[in-house]
Image (cartoon, rainbow, N blue to C red; front, side, top):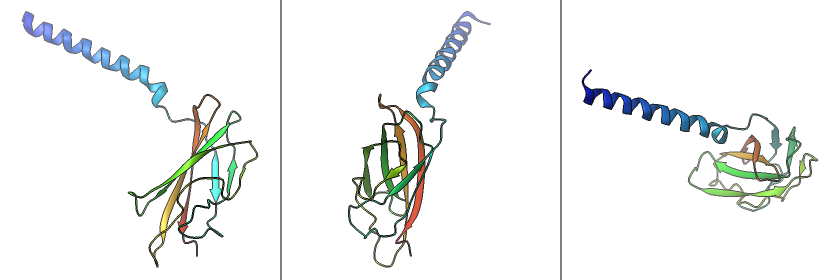
Length: 141
């Protein structure tokens, strides 16, 4: 191999090794939490276009969970930001109605929309320990 081509080849090999090393170092930060928990809710009793959140039942949240972060998305109007909030979690599994700050479901008259909540279990150091999702159609009937 000519010297110039050999230099290029060695340079490419070093770059590949550098990229692999960087990717390996980043893996712990990119990994999705392995521990799973579940969340469920019902839209029954929730008025449209209000800010009262539904009650939730949380099961199998990690023991170190101190807070839960709730975010709601409308699958039929993905550009609309319903928001959500982070609340203290006492481990009881019960999140009362109205505990979450958000903009409630408000589909156009005569339409049903699909909503998905993402709930993250967070520890005292603000690390995400696990994620759960819960979905429902509004209006529920």
